[in-house]
Length: 207
Image (cartoon, rainbow, N blue to C red; front, side, top):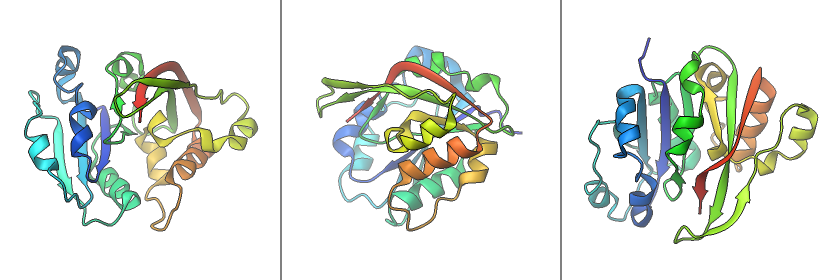
């Protein structure tokens, strides 16, 4: 069994101006202590900018970044490809123009769980502008009443989830022509998860 607890999957296309912010947490001391218990799969979906040059400026002291290429087939294909390469007991999808804050790694309980169960976590975030100035706060809904959660699926973004491998195996691969992958992931997660833990803290910056 893999020793990787969490796989972070990041689809990237022409995000060179933002990738430094998106990966700013990698060399933080608290992340370095986690070592190989996390991995970041960066799926380049046919970038035509200077992404590789910008990636070369980013320190990765523990060596958790796995850079792979996807033949420009779109975000859904990139998500499927990244998941197929993941080794973690749980999976979290993040975007290349956003910022996952280090606080999430302290708040998540993903370390405690195995990958075979059908469990999920959902967390809050801050809506920010291009310079990361705060605009609003996103607060995840309660999932105690599943029917109510289904009514508001569009408000549960993909980046807000951390999902066990057992649950991911039920919802992946995403359909190739899927127009709204956030809604698909929310619907499938709410349907199949045996438990959903809510982290109310805003630990993600969404541009």
